[in-house]
Image (tube, rainbow, N blue to C red):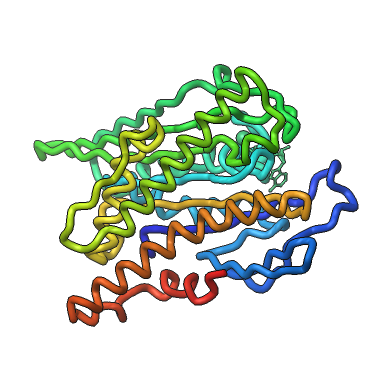
Amino acid sequence: MANIRVCARLRPANSKEDGEALCFTRSDSQCFTLQDEKDEHYMFSFDKVFYEDSEQADVYEFLARPIVTDAVKAINGTIITYGQTGAGKTYTMEGAGILETDNHKKGLLPRVVDELFEAINFCGETAAYKIKLSMSGIANRAVGETQMNMASSRSHCIYIFTVQKEVANEKRVSIGKLVLVDLAGSEKVEKTGAEGRVLEEAKTINKSLSALGNVINALTSGQQGKANHVPFRDSKLTRILQDALVSTIVSFELHLEGGSSQTALLCCCSPCLCNFSESLSTLRFGARYITYLCLELAASIVDDDRNDVLFFPYEFIYPFMAEP
Ligand code: ADP
Ligand code: MG
């Protein structure tokens, strides 16, 4: 299982969008085409695409389950949802609400909690586990009203699970950290018609999202063996994600099976033509995350005459073939 997975999810059109033109054409479970009103085509390819009819359980199985079971083995993991307001980030992360009881609609979070305890129960080891969850509090989450969405989330929401394992008679404690990030909407400020406090918040959000993009670029465009300045300190978001992002890249460079950390990024999109430009920018953010990583790495490995390129897992190389 590759330790960086980038996927896309297209939510179903909602009642407000009834009769609106759509801008996606399905190819298969990894590829689709986005088209604008001038019928320009943009082909995208990801590790997996979750279409309108995908179930919450499908997203959990592919994107989160391997990361959750590894957290119990002290392997760090990060799951990030990215996209414009209303694209389905929170629905994916929480379900229709954090206390969702409809099993069908349950998001990643309640499934993560279930699986963590199950993995501990069935790990077959006699050990003492402590699980800690920290987050800012949904009740306190800043929500501002913009033209994009009546209840658009104006802040990132970060859930940090710490799984501590202590084996009796072994003076050793191992810790796995699992970070779930429901990012604030990635839309451009002008489109939201935001003013005053909401505008100021939007600027901060855009700043931290572009800081995340810069960090990913710096991490993935550095040359092997050369220190590269990675601007983690440019935002609180990137400082929080520092551990997770660094160890993922390092473990990928050593092409370890699994490695010391795993990351999954889900690009959430509306299916409607009216949201075309935001969807394009969301999908390009995701495509950039993997393209830089593979192309730079492949190049550096060939330069070193190690011919290791063949060891790249197929699902890593495949997305570049169809880069728009
Ligand atoms: P975001 O967090 O990206 O701003 P939400 O997750 O709040 O967006 O989604 C906006 C609306 O669309 C919500 O009412 C949510 O229930 C609905 N929605 C999003 N994704 C799906 C989906 N895959 N299936 C059904 N409804 C969805
Ligand atoms: Mg949200």
